[in-house]
Image (cartoon, rainbow, N blue to C red; front, side, top):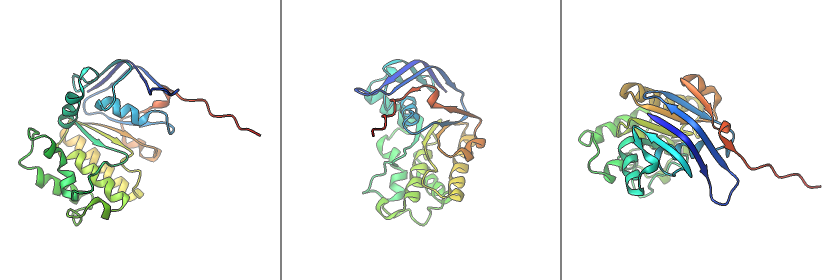
Length: 227
């Protein structure tokens, strides 16, 4: 499902480097990504989905060399292949909860499953406890509720790959467990690959494999204390 070959990534003008000689994730695998803040966990997800491209090397996702696509092709690839749960949610303030969940279908008329999309969106909202908030705007939701909207949006198209950046980070343990249950159940039902960035090591036993992105990163040296 995912393959990195001799990948190198640099942010312009900064000391951070990410070097991944080889990394493979199998179809249907549940993978957790851990590492200290600033070590490149979110960057790794962005490379897999084609939001950013490597300085060198190759990224192949779902048999597509994403790193070789142009901007428009990568956007289309994400809509058809990847369900993304962003750490900052990326909800549209002028849309209701329901319309935010259904946003991928607005962005691309050719997405599969369009006919049953509304019913699926409502069912996903029910499963994460948002059934009574479908008409609200994001500004009228808590952080945890906005996070659950983002999860529903990522799952509504039944993508073969789900990438989730701290999907339980703003949730209490009980609700976080419920949301992770839905992500895992979705992946099992649709044989989707699930890659989750998390700081919560209590969740790691739920995954088949864990990688520490710090193994691939070169971080800036900490500043020396001054007297």
